[in-house]
Length: 290
Image (cartoon, rainbow, N blue to C red; front, side, top):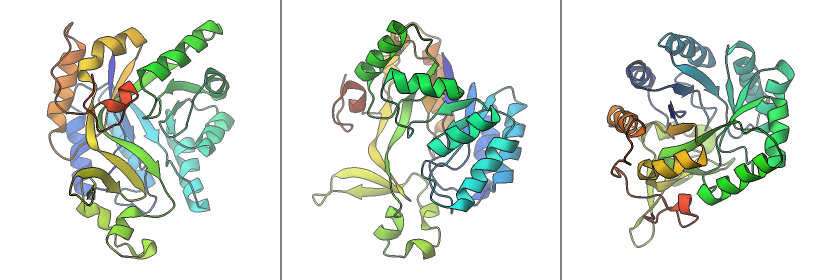
């Protein structure tokens, strides 16, 4: 079972981002995803910087995948995507169907990201015909839905692509053309001042009763809870999961990677280091299930 470092969902300063990935080069990871998936206005690293960083990390022996935006709204954003596909020298994580189309046209293998919305084996087969080599199910697709889809694929005599499951981190729940961070801070989206850089793990949102509820991250909304599927490793193995995705966190990421590295080599499931995994069981995400 492989370990992947998912794309950075938050907006960090340039030097902090580069330092993070320099450290990650020495972590026991098999795959690293690089690139901006949330907001095209986040330009601490340019497209060229991401491509150069990908080449640098590839030298450490890791597979590097360049990730695309989940919501493409402008011609300029499409231009960035075209450059990633043309110059990336490797796989692309397609988080939007425009990325699928460009990868198909150029014969570039791609990963279906969690925002691509694949819900049945027919759609999976069509994407595999286009060049899909790895599938990351959406956050609401727990073990029961994944098992059903996998069984349908096998019953149809098809081969499964690599299966990658989000095992640790805050789950991306939704995207919008509006910027939630700008709205929360009462500033226009076009004059946001890049305020999300002040919240390296997202801006906490509570209910009126003061109960932690969600995280605001630019145009993205995340669950407040951190999902941890470490104790579900036996079930993940039985499902045929090939890759465990760990989303970058502002603090303690080296320890999280080390924890999962030991867990994947052990016959015993590890203790839980975060509290929530309700989505995996088809329940409320904030629920401590299992």
